[in-house]
Length: 279
Image (cartoon, rainbow, N blue to C red; front, top):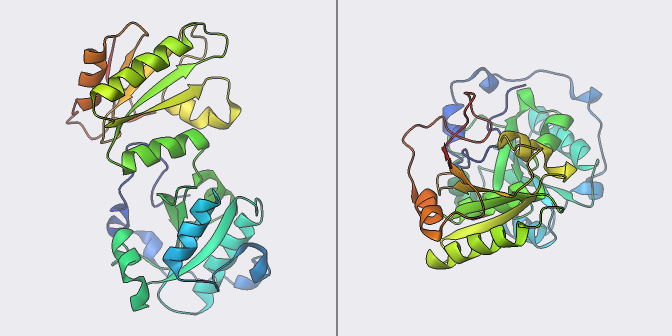
């Protein structure tokens, strides 16, 4: 299965849509939509009330993820895409909402620009996290129920996406509840954030949190660690270093502001040493 955009810290820009124009996913899908479960509109979709932007904002207020079904014309392909989104949303109807976005409607021009949909292969489904931030998406040819559900970010991943979306660096404090120095690590990061005029955010990540296993794997966290570890991530979403609780505010600040020229550096990236410089 090819995703338009993998949920990865480094890849938060929606410019990936433009790169899909020449992909095989642009081909028209002729599958019979009769085999796709057809759910009642009122079960998971609230597209009849308010404009699209208003619906997205309301979903965010309710801490709901959104499957944004993007299309430019009515027809079998649009209906199949919508049906897949509804089937996926029905798995967790209290936390997921389906919203439709017609790019040919001038009322949606700002959203077309925001999500860089001009020239994108349609129809497709964009996954918005609980903050209304785009986390990934699938074109119809690749859209599946499981695929959509896997793109929804975990709570801590959403915190990271929100910080990056707000042009902030991030300090991730990785810990276990049994670690006595957890509070010291968090306090150290908060002092650094203050020294950066709140130009960074602190995310607390419990190694034992089963809901964060994907993020923990991407960060290559040592699950056998006995002390907290601080991960510094710059505004580009690159891990620039890992640090212990005694690291100075100056060193943490420098790490958060560090720019890595290589574009291949991110949590879970290739290479045995991972990204950034360890201290």
